[in-house]
Amino acid sequence: MTALNISEAQNRHHRDVNAERGLAGLIDVVTGSFQNVPYDDGHFDVVWSQEAFCHSPDRARTVTEAVRVLKPGGALVFTDLMAADGVPAKTLEAVVSRLRTNELATPEFYLRSLAASGMARIEFDDLSEQMGHHYERLIEEVRAHEQELRAVISPDYLTALLTSLTLWVDAADRGQLRWGIFHCRRS
Image 1: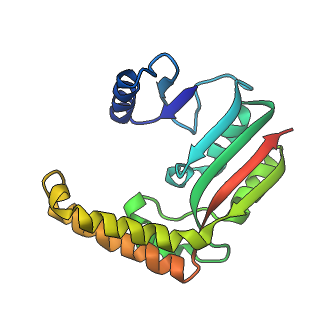
Image 2: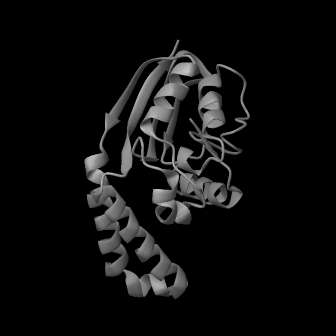
């Protein structure tokens, strides 16, 4: 198994946790970008990502790279935070600012990009109805551990986080956001 992440600090932590749990020989932790995956064409049987593509400045390139490193018949499975089709980027500007991105992709964007990249049997399981509840639970957890968190992160960051999470709940409740699982196979 290979784990790819652009942050060497997070990768060091990942390697340490793997070693503590006896997994060091099973997971190769690699520092690199999903926009330029450091592997040959057709290297992997499966490419899997969870809520990472939304951080890409070039999501079309990210999809192309994910497909490129798949073997023929290989599976691409990913989840991502998305805007609902037809929702203008301006509408979600405040919501996505914490992600340090200007806009989110949409389900339609991914469906088109995957098809254009040669993927087959493209499916999207729309689980968007769970988003509002998910972010409400995050708010509850942050508030439940607020004193502990204040000891390790700045009060300003904590306030900004709670404000941002509230915006996510509101946008989800208004149907402006989407979340789900894409799965497809390389032809």
